[in-house]
Length: 502
Image (cartoon, rainbow, N blue to C red; front, side, top):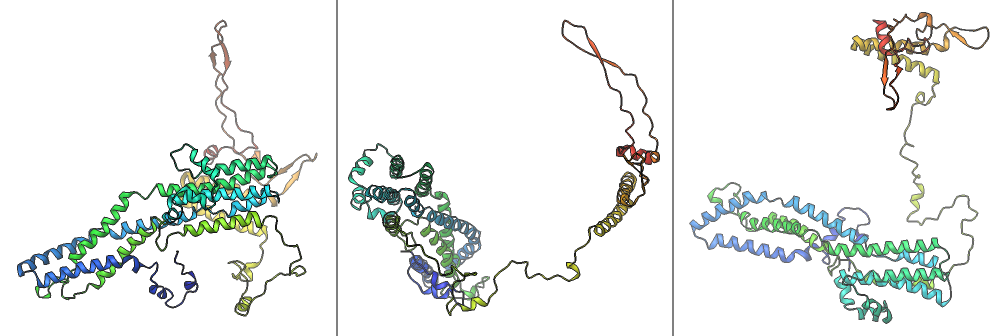
């Protein structure tokens, strides 16, 4: 049974986890005590042999071996390899639990879409949920040792009521060498289609919703099968195990205390009990034992999934939902807060202090601004300030760039100044009222202020021969010459303006 200690750590307090250290069931002590005693026994045996059995010459050789093992044992990357492996195992362990086939969503859809209070309607609903439970039992007895011990054969499944004898004949007569956990799902689909033809399922949308929930349920059963089939690569598990065991095999020799009289470096203290070596063994080998327990959560360890409990729970609640609770509604009546403008549930004396706490409105509600920063600014004044700032920036950039870049920025600044003064320039209207003439002095808008542009040389238009059909002679078409000067109301390209400025 799963070890649950959530209530013990509901509130963080001084030494909150320390009370968990005394638990035995599901603890690291229960997993590790045999390995720890074995390591400590071998260490003490080597220490006693060094002190009381070996001769002086043998002791000197053993001391060199201790220094060598202690120096090179740190080259084994135990922390990196073991940490990544345990992270992978824990992630896989939780994903397997998320793939447990739970019938809660499916039973609600069955109760809401398969109608009929008579025995026929009741039979449809109960059979549909029994097929779903049968599929879960078949897949769980394929991956869980606890479920297999409960249902070792199909006969046990029949006697438990998950399958009838007629269904067992059809199941066994189906010629397939693969796992047939999916067969009850196909029976579910066929029975749902028959209920639709009889009108128990009133429209195709309800049938579609029912089959979609069945596919989700069947997908979880399939994922459990694949998790059981595809394990973490064996080479990775072997590398981690060899790394941990070889490291502590080297520590058995390299962590021995040597005679301080010999004057070896870092061996000035002689202790018989390796405290920190045992702590290191406890952490690293304990980490490996955690991965060993979680790599297959469908066994019979203390923290493995309670699959038999889930089978019993799922079968019971699914039958209650589609049978006894079908169309079972309480009398509709007004709730306690029917006439209340602000509905709020009461608090007990232990939680009354929560009423004094303000509700969270958002992280920006605590920001305060100065009074002058909260005044709206007029758009015209804002544009003026923006224009001045832009002009100063262009002036600095023009002075720093010089050359062609300076001439371009000067021209751009002159255009911007003319546009910003357009609202205040004196414009006179034409007598017929069809247009206005602006006298703001813009060389781009006033044709009289524009510098004359040199006329391009007139070239004769050559005739290019174009081949026509085979039966007709060649024809000629004129090639257009260079374009003339642009109209005065259009701005000239930047290159021409630079030539004019030059």
